[in-house]
Length: 256
Image (cartoon, rainbow, N blue to C red; front, top):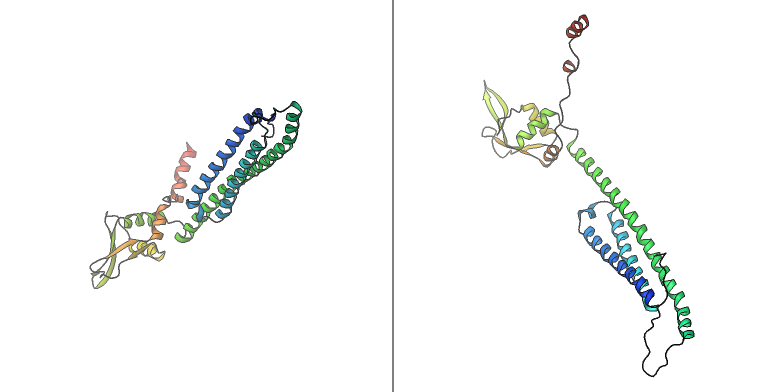
């Protein structure tokens, strides 16, 4: 827009009209983006209000740029014929009209350039700010999940929790006069009572205490347990016995 050149009249209309339509398209696009962002989950992220307000300013600035360009069109001197009975413009009159219009047209054009500069700056800040907000929001969400579920589950506990998520019950039976508590899962996975208690201590499972242990208390994976299951399954640590070859094997290899 800074490089646009024209002469007042038809030539000015031909050059300014596309700029005006582009500014109006920009305002419409910014408004659509603002509406979409306002209706999205992004509004739940800290700092999102500033982005919405900045995008609203882009709508305003692009609209003002369109208005400034419309004023260029309005100020432009046209060469149509006068009403009947009026003398035709002489060259001196036409030159005077152009000389009067040019500063006004240039002023409106400069104002439009300024408003569009504000749009460009706002869009750059928006692109950076929204990206940063989304990354920060994801980090906070991950931290919240880690804080809720605690340290990563050992593989055995993760597998037990997976089995219990498919259905399980807690029973108590008398063996030699002693009460023995055991866990039964729907898929037959063996879950020790120690593992169950570790999961329950972390709040990852709960049981229905309204029924008797003799009948069986249904085990339910809590919301925290579901969050733990949403994490990738941890890998078992490589034991030193596996990681380090036996000394005998090393010695045999050395003799060879």
